[in-house]
Amino acid sequence: MKIRLKFRKQGNLRFIGHLDVMRTFQKINRRAGIDIRYSAGFSPHQQMSFATPLGLGLTSDAEYVDYDMLSVPGKEAFLRQMNEHNVEELKILDACLLPDDAKNAMSLLAASDYLLTFREGCEPEDYDDFFEDFRRFLDQEHIPAVKKTKTGTQEVDLIRQIRKFERRGNAVFLRLDTGSRSNCKPEFVMETFYRSLGKEWSSFTFHINREELYGEENGELKALIDYGTEF
Image (cartoon, rainbow, N blue to C red; front, top):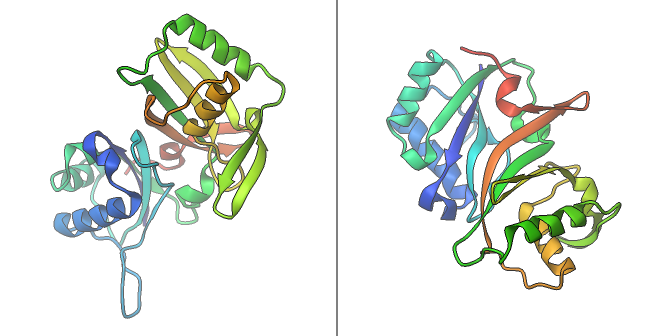
C-alpha cells in the first residue's frame, strides 16, 4: 500500500537541511507507530521517498513524501496520528492513496510554483517600475544564462524554463520547470534579471515560499496530491 503525504516546512525549519528533514520523519513515524514498510537486510530502513529537496532558507506549503505502508487507518486518523508527534512548522497537510504501480513523486516532477516576497529593507524604490522591468525581461525571445552544475557550468535559455509569471500585490509569482529533464530555481531567475539591469543581486532580497509541485500529463500540469485517491 502506497500513500503520498503533503506537508509544509515553515518558520525556523527553513534552516534545516533535507537530510535532517528525512531523519525527523523517521522519528515521527516511530513515535506515532506508523506501520511503514522496512527494507530487508542487515540495516533495514523505512521505505519512503521525498519528491525533491527544498533549498536552505526557503519555506514551503507543498512538500511531498511517498510512503510504502503495510497498513494504514483512514486519512483523518492517519493525519492526526502523525501530527500529534510533529511540530506545527512541519505539519502534514494532506494525504492520498496511490495505486500499486504509481510512479514516485520524484520521477513525476515537472514544475513548481513559488511566491517571492521582498524582505524588509530590500524593497525597490518603485514597485511599478520593478515589475515593468521584469515583464520586459520576460518578454525576450531568448534569455541566455550560465548555470552552475555539480560538474561545472551549463548554458541554458532561461525563458524556456519559466512557465508563468504574475504580479501578486507586491510579490512575484513564478512557475518554473522542476525535475531531472529541466530544472530552474527562482533565485537563478532573479539573479539573472538583476544582472541584466546592472544591479547587485543578493540572495537575501526575497523570502521565497514554494506553493505547489506538479507532474505533467498530456501537456497539462497536475498537483502531486491529485495523483492519488481518498482513503
